[in-house]
Image (cartoon, rainbow, N blue to C red; front, side):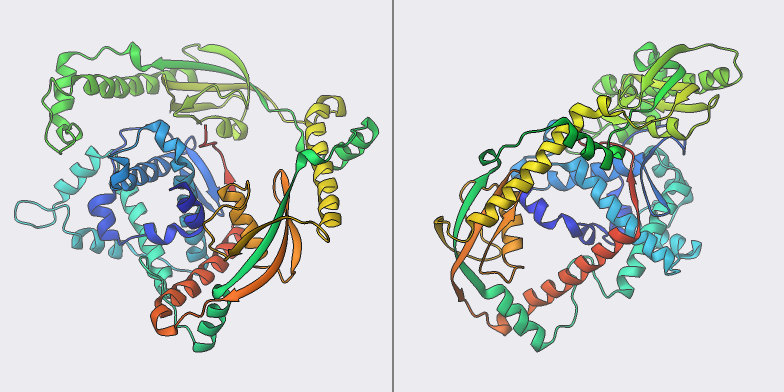
Length: 497
């Protein structure tokens, strides 16, 4: 599964920008109430468009739901399994791809009117009354239960429709992008993908080279790359934490919440859980709501200085205010002014409100401060240079191992290369015009020599669909490269933690 994701990650976006109707009917996932201010929940910025935490969490939930449909996983993955399969990274990558395309659409002047958004909602036939007619009451109540406002939902839908429009302009469909392909293009693709090479290969591990790291050379290296080593920003803050556990909801509070949001409390088969069966979840949900309410009052009191908080000195890399592995506050503290009070932010333990008392900017480290870190990078760089020189020398007469015929999609083993290294090696091999050479990987060099070539002709009629998809994929790859170069992406969180 991980290998499949690695091979297809570039244009996963094509498969997930499904029709707006399907999105309205099945794409909404209830993640609860977060209570973040608009300035405190940025996950990333792509071009001129921000990606917010709630979007990331919804996409994360959507991918988990996709995995739950795959039989070998036996249902929804837990958090540890989700991290193992790289789902947080996949969710962020999808959102970045979507937002790149949004930027392009906006630059091209593609817009969606309020009327188009309204028509999509009504025509979806999701928010209907007993008579099957669209109901504003059902619409608003459903969104409320899912923790979304109509304006947020409609903006999300507007973005989907913008994406659909630009895909339509580009002649790309979500399921199987198809572009016209000529007979000469088919012939070229046939030739390129029918070629197989019989290879001899040999691996030169990094351990075959060694270097001496002298301080004078290290200092020259540091001077050229000094911007890579900076001190972390430092902050003095005053904060008030309202723990979830400090809230003690009454039975009346729990019953009211249960009655108002029954649809949140369902079993695995979609059946309604009883009040008692839901009690544990109810307590946590109501504690969160009550803590948020208290935190809003604490924000007011901290802002007007009628209440004091705890004083804390911290650095930007200390990860103090964390929710599900995401540091929610550092990027906002960086841009906040001294004296500014940030709105309540949900962390793992509760809601936190903080005031910036002082902050110390990041500065370039001195040579002595950066010496240890610089030495690691310097030695790795010098070793790669030396390994490259050794590979260049050996490639002319190495004996190697005959691994037989391979093509660009070869699934067999290539000595000790892992899947990622093998893909990188094959990609280089089949894009090179050289009969022999070497490929530098992270910690090794792979020498290769093409002993002979063969071709397996492919009939045009049986594979026209394959070739059309290949052409579409090439177009999408070119578009992806353009988007990556055109729209700068700044990521504010580390989703791997």
